[in-house]
Length: 205
Image (cartoon, rainbow, N blue to C red):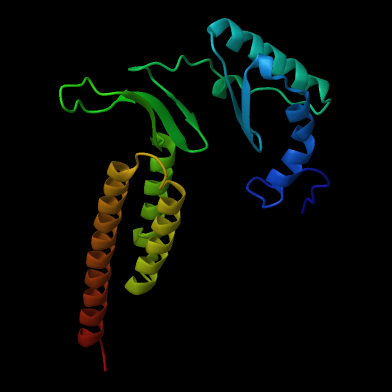
């Protein structure tokens, strides 16, 4: 059995606190002229006015993290420069997808452009995977009421986090998916119970 002597487990409740202890220095060292730094634990973004400023900000960020002496650096597969414009691809941050969209035209106007946000594809897939896991065939031994309660707790918490922004249409999809998985689980549970009852009635006495 191996016992680690350093680091914290991924998802540990103390991990964000320790991350803030180390990266508080980055917040203090950052200058407003480099762009607006927004950080939550080890997830961060920098809002800039131009691509040139964004490239300079990325270089400055890399240099500052290296200066901490902790072996930290932006992850290449998760780091990119995005131009936030109407019709653009947008970006993901803290589970939300952010994108500039235009509202529906009203009273002869062409609508207005605003920053919309809703659960990212990764967040939606996580929710679907979690619901499917809780209502999978291997859990047929569990009572239906228990599985329904567990799914409700997860969906309630997930919806509570993503209640901000423009998430209603995503909520409808997750709700429909949860109902479908619960319906399938209930049908399989009933079928399994019927087979068990039939087996007991024809067995030796």
